[in-house]
Image 1: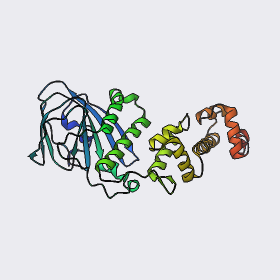
Image 2: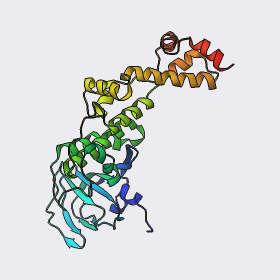
Image 3: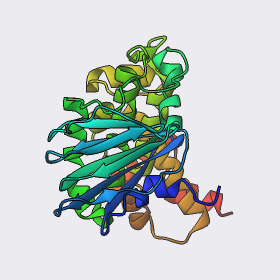
Image 4: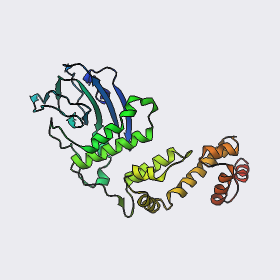
Length: 301
């Protein structure tokens, strides 16, 4: 195939200049992108042919839009797509559009791999497709809310928080899988602990922020749980409550830095998320059984 799927991810085939795109990963399984495309003039015309791939495009309209639409060579009933509604396109099928009105749209490119990531924890069968009729104008408050939450990121992609993007795209993928993929709703925990994807997500978030403040409520929200429920389930899965797990990870990082670098202890304490050297010394001594200075002398021989 001469073209790559990047033309789908960045919506190049729609021939809109100055489109803004942000990209995120869903549990390292699939890359989800969101792109805002705007045109004020009428009769944009026929778009180019997209690349056939195992992915979906969700088009959330920020203003009323109308045009003609064909799928697999047959014209479908598509009178209009209203502001705040979305239309779903399966890239395994051949779509063609004649865009007649002005438009302002947020398009999500969602590979099926991003939905497959949840199959085990959703407890449903393989998600072959999303069950939305071609050309259907779907009113979905969750998709609408996620699209609007991403507008500031699309306006300034370089300043966007990666954790926020990952949370939004995971929420979108989970919602699509549950609502339109005929999968059961995700169980909150397995055997009293976190589901596999929840534990992986929680660890990814906390490891990425060892040098700063990490509100447990934010980690719990990313896992779809309350703070209290998350704290109990995390302890069952790891043997430690979240704050103790964080302390041990910070001490592990500090030991690596003390062994491999010549940085002063106050700098290491700050880099590893401790308030100051005194706080670092108290926590380190309680876990390791000696002060950081004594441990460094032994480690460096």
